[in-house]
Length: 192
Picture 1 (cartoon, rainbow, N blue to C red):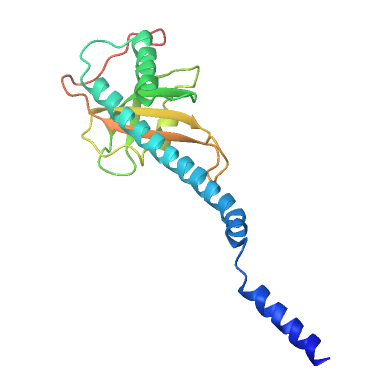
Picture 2: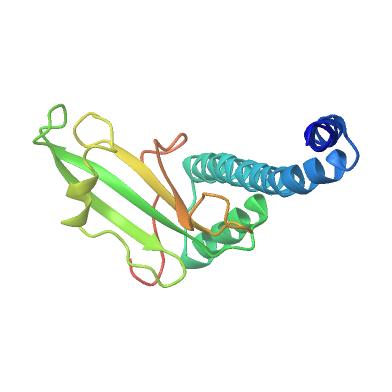
């Protein structure tokens, strides 16, 4: 009886000290985790890169509009959406909305009255009307009475390549800028 207990103890000790096959077991346990981490880091990096490129492209379009001295048309603004698509190099749907806003009264307090000179949106989206601009008061800075600013909104639908914790969403940017070389940007499109 004592020999069988000694034999069992020796075999358990041998089993405990045996390290053959541990590398395979560790690899089988860790490899899926490493693959998931690699894919997740790629998806998160892509989302932040896309958001950053989207913001830079929005500022570029706002700068282009602020330098405009000629009357802009539907064709110009649709072409501006094409420039936006080119700058962002995206496979996702995009659209832009350009609105010129004038402050009519009480321009230095929250009760100010904003007026839409004109608004145009690409891809069949709705432009902003006089009632709708009042919801943008927190996005438009205070300005002198009678002054005009350009509100550029860019929208990009984003869907990650893999499900790694980032849901499908849209990147939206609001850029407010003043015209540089004229008092306002005129619109001569179909809805003017």
